[in-house]
Image (cartoon, rainbow, N blue to C red):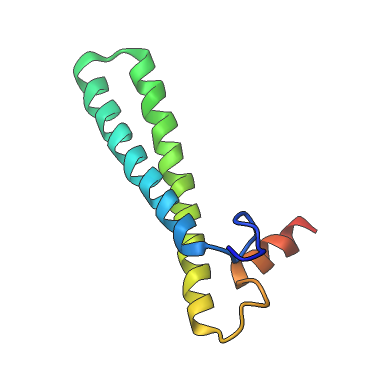
Length: 95
C-alpha cells in the first residue's frame, strides 16, 4: 500500500467495497433465514434477529455504495491527491 494507510479515505476503495459487499450478501442471507424461521416458529429471538440483520443490510448497502462511488470517481480522476466527494461531504457534515 506504499506508505498510505488502508483505512484512509480514498485508499483501497475496491477492496473495501468487496469486503462490505461480502458482508452485505451474508447479512441478506441471515435476514432471509430469520424471516423464514420467524414465519414458521414465531419465536421472539428470531424476530429480533430479523430486525438486526435487516438493519445490517441497510448499513452495508450504504457502505458498499460509498466505496464503489469513491472508486469510480478515482478511476475518472488523473490524480488521487484529493478524496472523493463522499469523503468531502462526510467531513463537511462532521465539522
